[in-house]
Image 1 (cartoon, one colour):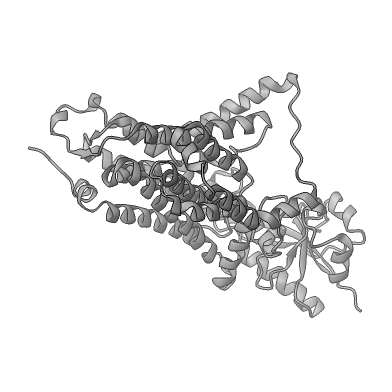
Image 2 (tube, one colour; image 1 turned 90 degrees about the vertical axis):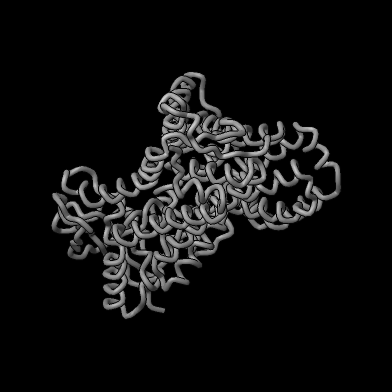
Length: 502
């Protein structure tokens, strides 16, 4: 007897409802995890907020849009990280919805649901989605840009040009990889007959004008800062090491797609005894141009981004794994064929759910159990709120003024910058990265200098003592971790630089 689950019936009858259900559930999962198990923001979120608080047109971290939005969300939530976590999940929801719209235009609504379900298992869309910043904000913009690009190329909808230009301009204000991504879109248009026909009008000229207007402030900052500098090519002797690095980046992308590969393998006839009884998800035939579009944007960002990162020895793929693998699920559906047989449904459902929940369980497990192993510290277990409140209150009690700036250890200083008074972050080791403060300005306004204490006297490290002569350390402050385990207490040495009286 044929068995058809409620999930399959929802995919067939209510595909949009199915997409909203799974996307909202995943967003809720990744909203609960940091609220319950994170005592400090993950990744570089604290630095993003510290830079966003200054509303600079550009910094060495890239274009400004993500930093501005992070600060707005943080302030809107009453200086609480809840606002930033909400913003990150809104980006995740928008990414999958725009991907569904694109997939629906290519393979129909029912198989578009399958494309979204496969893409959700890519680990780049799990815990990294909490680390709001340029890489996270660029995902929905890239997905929407691809959707409108297909409407321009494949459906000849000229009225989309204005929206396309807005999205391209916002992408340029979000990530430094935007230029390469826009070149990929332009290259695909030029390489295809229908794409060239799309460009043969005045609409692209007006789109360029809109893009230039949106990106002009950041471009002016790039010129003034002298940031238009190409990285130097590696010497021939290092090409072997760079090739190995590139292979590791490609391997990381492949590992991120392990969930997609596992689901595809389990759905093959090899694991099904009666394939004729499997329910079928049908689609209309996909035209050749649509196949080329999907394959190109599933391969080119990943291959090109990893190759550039490998050659120039960058830590991550250009644009991030979320951009590189955004089209992987849709590409897998297009390859599968017009008829998708859902074999072994009772196995596919828990495997898919496990691929979604496993990263969350890993994050929770690292927070609760890793401290008991005596291994490296968990950065999200730092008591950010207690640290920020203590140093903000201490400075105000000593000087009768609110804390205006914080320097020293970059990680600890960025957490202190989350205090309700929002002090400025000053990276004294690299002052050119924080141009809103100089050593002279910091000495004038005063502030707190923090570091990790290595003794009970709180002696500052030599490099910090050299940058702040005459620093008088206070008694180190000990803080408990979210889970102490076998770790010693977090001891922070600190000193106050008193503001100069007028």
